[in-house]
Length: 248
Image 1 (spheres, rainbow, N blue to C red):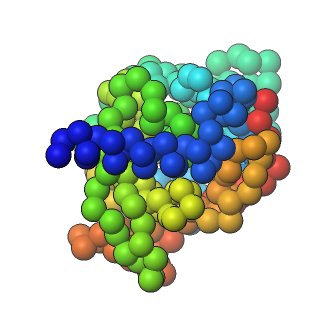
Image 2: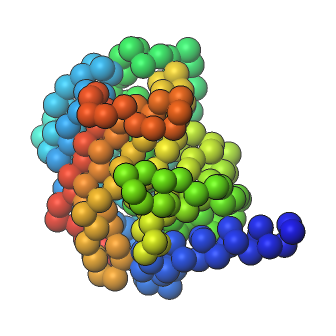
Image 3: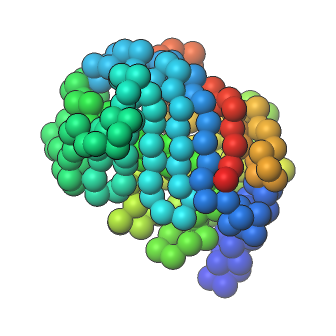
């Protein structure tokens, strides 16, 4: 029985990775970049309204690194890694930096304002998580388990629960990905640990092919209720519209 369960979860991960373009193709590139058009109530809640309305992002695919620009100033950009975050100018001079940024969120709730460096940390790990899923799930330290199916709006999704390695900065250690019949991720559930464990149901749509890799160009995040359903239609916590996507 245990061997059958192991095979099933591995089959689902294999199906999902293949549907998104396959590991071999993903490994041909080191970075993914895009223009982000963002909205939602989160940015005002944390004290930075309009901060990511229209911004460019680049994430690395073989190490945890993300940069956003222009960040709050036309001359500034961010440099995020799991254990350090910085804001730099166009000369790459450090304007401010923070080591062990996750520790700085201790005791925070959904109503606690963030500093600029905390904003850079959140946006950095979030986009890295989104750009690298599901390919990183086959990597060292990740654990996957297939949960019972979930039906929503007449569609049945297989669900992949992923436990992230401790050293990877992300929303929460355990996250759940809802896979459609074609193997694409259509929903992503997590808790935002740095914001008091706020629950999220994150929907992905409008997939396009970018150099052989499938990427969702629209993302909408809502509150996830106790019965696992999203709180529609408000509040819309975050919306992300990806444009000008490229891989190098």
